[in-house]
Image (cartoon, rainbow, N blue to C red; front, top):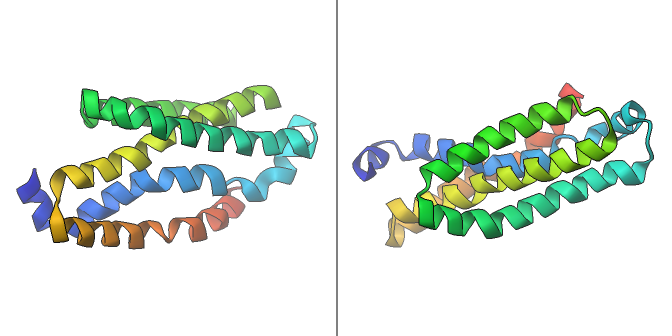
Length: 159
């Protein structure tokens, strides 16, 4: 795998950046939709803000738990399970019957998105070392630094 990765480091970095971007997208993409979410669920601003807190808690706890799981079970299986869970929870958020279910699903969404953050960086450490590791992390950070800028724009276009 290392040989293939060395031939296409930018493509590999973009793939890992997509996983890393799930966390910031999970948080920032829907911020501009708070008023619409409040109207949709016929609730107050505090409940909608609780969904943001819930997602952030999921992101934090997920990183603590999924990192060691990926060390024990390998990178692929926890990442696949987490991405499937992220997809299902995202669909669930779109069809939530009430704000309480939405808040719970936002936690699951944040928790599963954290796998992208943790496992992508672990993969980089598995593949590279020394100066190559530093260069690749710089490339990955450069690509993912755009995420917080574009996710609110995409969220306002969707919402």
